[in-house]
Amino acid sequence: DAGVIQSPRHEVTEMGQEVTLRCKPISGHDYLFWYRQTMMRGLELLIYFNNNVPIDDSGMPEDRFSAKMPNASFSTLKIQPSEPRDSAVYFCASSFFQGHTGELFFGEGSRLTVL
Amino acid sequence: AQSVSQHNHHVILSEAASLELGCNYSYGGTVNLFWYVQYPGQHLQLLLKYFSGDPLVKGIKGFEAEFIKSKFSFNLRKPSVQWSDTAEYFCAVNGIGTDKLIFGTGTRLQVFP
Image (cartoon, rainbow over all chains, first blue to last red; front, side):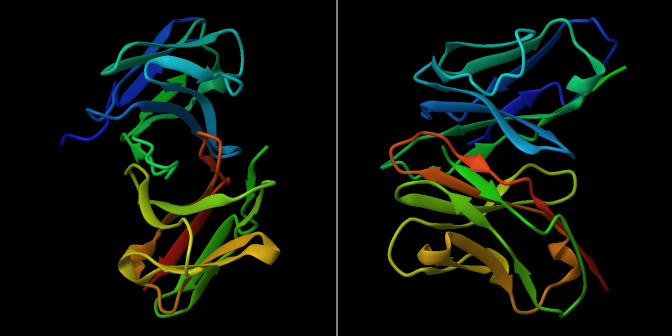
């Protein structure tokens, strides 16, 4: 299996621009998670989906952030408009919960820099 | 709500030294516990996990962790670290009955030859 695939790996943009991050989960996994990693706050859970349905978006920092999962093989995280404080590494992870095992498989992350 | 605390933010060791990284969690029920590792420039990967049974869990690369329920702790240990263990280590908790995996803020380990 190819694992969780994220794109782009690196994104540099200017404040105010729209940013779209993409994720392809592992085939057959029914959970998808978006995390944000910063030096100050570590790994924060932003939102997660189960069977393409958003379950908990309480970690999304502001209305500028939105996430969608139109089908089982694709998800996007959008920031509009972007701000310098959004600079971070954004990880997507997928899982197939069996008895709530909780093991996640992570992508390689998208490093976002907002100037 | 679940939460995880990792008290060591940055640990510096020489090769062959012993390692113990602290992890405490908060949750009002049964938990699954994990340690993930992130090597420089790479994504997170599972190091070891505890679901039930023997509270001493052995993982890859000689790592182990002990679940002490009375202390709400799941400390990571390795008797002798190597330069290749340089990485960031994350403790995580999944409260049974929830779908979330909540991570601690991570501990950066630097091992010098």
